[in-house]
Length: 317
Image (cartoon, rainbow, N blue to C red; front, side, top):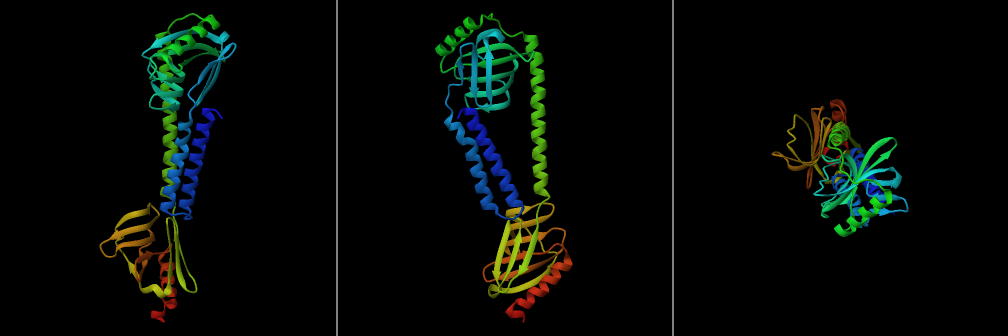
């Protein structure tokens, strides 16, 4: 498996884990702790492939340059090469799409000297080979080097001799045009990423539910990021309240729909909460070791549930 496939698989696995975690969290199947564990697993899945990079990203075939780097797979026939140069003090510039480590980078980049180009190189090596070539009727650029300066210079000589291309730098005016085009492309990618992020945030802000049920021996509350089951025998008292100050969130969810999870206020201290924000009434359950506050999706249902809960409790019979 080459480097591109490794990193692509890691990113894909990370995305799947994150979105699965969001879905499970939103539906209440998992809680906050499990969600954070999934996020940690997603980060590991994304970063682990970078520890397995092989390092040799560029080689020469019989009649072409073969680039096989993370996010950069490219073959450049010698016959398509229009010029080649070996440059010092090369700056990677901005990454549009690809891999950018502390020193190494590969993928689609943009800089002042080339405009938009394909990179597969190491900034710790003082020389970089720059190839101009034609592909699909368009002039393109690629920049790369190998494990050290001596090897890179030898590679440059082999390319120049094999292609017969002249050695000359890229035209500054053309590079400026390509730079503007590349920046527009990066702007589009950033705008698209922000839009996706906004959609995810909006989805999280508009999800949430609270439900409760009465079993033979216990009260069960199921809400987004909050699940509680309380035996009737552990309940000391219950109250139907209106206008409770819920205080601040310690861990959980608080959006435009619900507040759920671990909260803290001056009346109860640390307690468990699962309420619809639009419903003013709530049921306060005092147990032997904690306080739980919840409601249903309207005042009428909450009041009716409270009355039925009272009938189930030994102290209210």
